[in-house]
Image 1: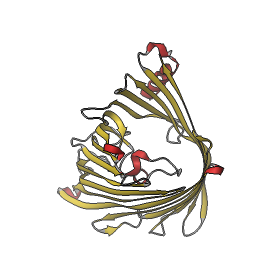
Image 2 (image 1 turned 135 degrees about the horizontal axis):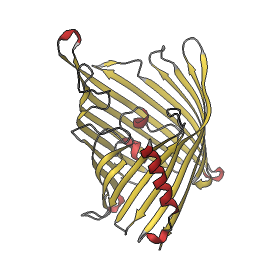
Image 3 (image 1 turned 180 degrees about the vertical axis):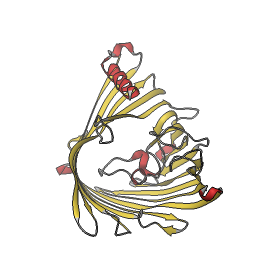
Image 4 (image 1 turned 120 degrees about the vertical axis):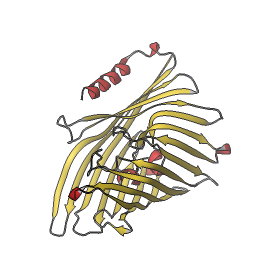
Length: 362
């Protein structure tokens, strides 16, 4: 806990230091998501109000420093409220990395440190809905991880590409793996208004998807993780439609010592599905109308786990009174499971997102 308070103290010290002590250029940015949540849980017997509260879901404090046009360093801390802590608040590092631009080739960047995970829509998710990106919500991959990546732009702005090696645990877990996660992402723009591409990942072993202990019978790990996520987005005037198919497979290895005999068991898991999201912009009114539909399923040895498989529907309105820096979001979402005994949820979200930034230079 002391480390968290020290990080917060250090961040605010940097915030108020005079810019003249820096030789380059410093950017300070704050983004906060203030949210009201009104949630119901519905089972076969009754509907119960489970939440009616205001909260600070995210408070990103960004400190970015530019040494010169090719060398930059980025740091983001997330300050938020949460019932998980006795203090009813938490602090975590969201990203901290060095970027070297034009590394070996023009428009090729080298990124080293805690950074975005370049898989699926997760790395460029714009939070048009209050709900997280599909792969983040369903915990297929973490939104950020420790590693090194190369990101670049194709000639004539025909698209962009990313390739990275990551720990594989995500940004909020202690590293325990010995094999890195390999990720790649490619987006192509054949013509204006159309973006197509996809992501791929592979990891030989990962001990963090399940609770891990080096002593049987609790030593579970996943092996040969493979992910695939083709993506497409079409924009025609004020209408935009995007969608993605997600597939994530891995084998779970478990050593069972029940009865005094060591038995190795292996089960194949398959997670994924798809999402679709249409968006209509009404520019004179500074509004966006949107919908979203997710289908998620989990299979174990080819059999669907009905307690984990679900669908999600979202309808929302976004209002931008001062441009993209301030947005009022109204979302209604419903989630239901294949197994009718698992309670579904109906949630109404009202969220205000505000951003400001200041640039200091000599």
